[in-house]
Amino acid sequence: MLEWGEMKASFAPDRHTFVLHIWRESGPVDAVPVWRGRIQHVRSGRESYVLTVNEIVAFLEDYAGGLQEKREAPDSRTTN
Image (cartoon, rainbow, N blue to C red; front, side):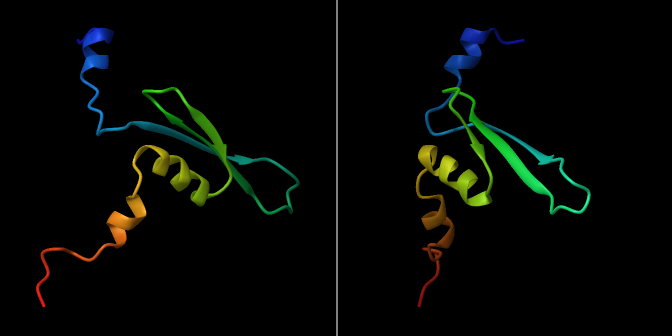
């Protein structure tokens, strides 16, 4: 088993680990369920409470900017 110092040293700057907790808020039986969440960047300990998927993506973008652009960019291997 790795010691904490060895594990901490193995974190590469271009890799990020996040913990996402989601839960449904209880309310009146006839109410529309409300989902809430908390996302945490493991290395920094920074966390944020979220209500939407867009808020989760925005948090991820702070550490891995350009996720949307990379996903939407045309494949560079394609030739015309």
